[in-house]
Length: 294
Image (cartoon, rainbow, N blue to C red; front, top):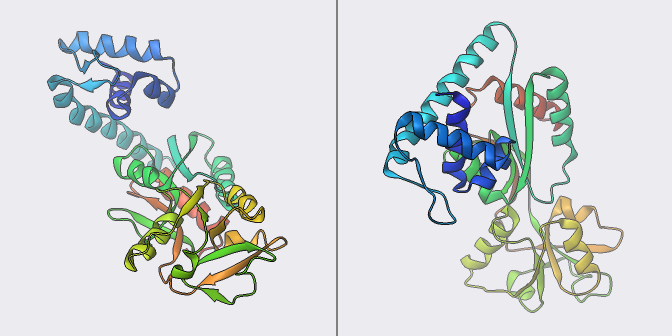
């Protein structure tokens, strides 16, 4: 029994799909399947029910999963303990990034960390904020830069990068362009373009609307702020963005304060534990890159 077999087993169990698991561990699907078959032969039991399109754990697989995770964690802890004693950090660091992110200090932090610790394999993945938070909770992602409606998601630690209000964004000539502020109810008179559910900005907006029993028409959705701004500039809808996002388009769009949304949109780095030396070191570089107090 080899650690890589356990790693592949856990990957398939969490992804519930051999193809996605193979992409996650960076080998071919046939390689993953062969190693898991070998593991099953050694254990004398099938770990997955392969009769459906989704790979589901058998009773034996469910019994094995917790112990496989524990074995991998123990092996990682062993390497980390030795690495800390010898002042070396090795292994893998998986960093998540919300879709449409244009926050370049994150890339500066990754580059600085890579120069300082070339023995660490860095993986960077994009997803919506809700899925990234769940990935951090599950241990599949070490840290993630996410949008959230709370400064610290339940069960995680967080480093707030930006906390700011939402604004409505319109082109010149729009009826709202000369207004100092607008209410959610007034926004409901116009079609809106916003980020999709699962993003922090959308969560803030939806919660604020729900608090007033409002159901505005989200006519268009896009994950990238550039796309949202382009749609608004063409007069298709009023955009809902954060203040710093809107500032990038002030040459062609006007930001109008939404007076009755008090909940801020937060961009934060989140993680589950700093027991990993790689996580601790990356946070040091992140604080420097984002110019945050240590």
